[in-house]
Length: 223
Image (cartoon, rainbow, N blue to C red; front, side, top):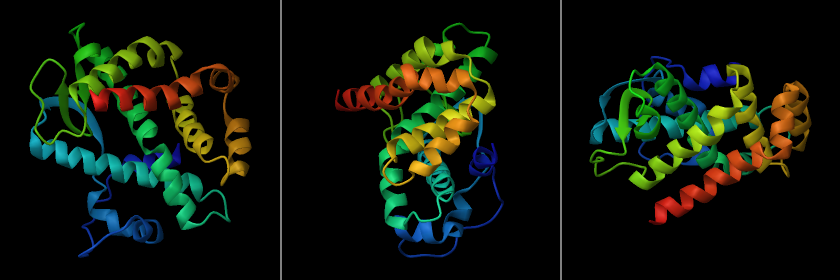
């Protein structure tokens, strides 16, 4: 829960002045991204424009970096190169799971029954709609948003995960794609996970969440 909270909270700091920033630098010096760690809020108040899209994309990437780095840091021997490889492998499924989970909350709070299939909240209180023109710089296509919302409604929502179980599922996604580097964390996270989460993940849900997201995202991005 602490990892999820620290990755989502804002810190009120400004970015360090750098002419070039690499993933290796970010893993070595997390404070480089301080200015990008604004508080994530998904209230879906206004439709996103190009500025909101760019801001959301940067914030979600920072969130994914923080999530991956903090999970990887539970393993003492993992190198920065392994952390970068882990980030590249889990960034898409981890981020889409977060957006899907947030859309479940937005749909539950909305008075409109169509929200679940059309509204995707972003971390700066804006949203994207599948039935409206997307900003030109949108980091998701209309098909990928539609696919994510449909998957969320049909599969993720049915699990009825508690906040703690959702956090553990995120951790399981990270350690699942990084079994070679962080095998010790795999058993550690599984031991902390409630039986329902472990059972669902071992049977079909982890495969569905991890690979299902990657597959439909690759298909939708291409069409």
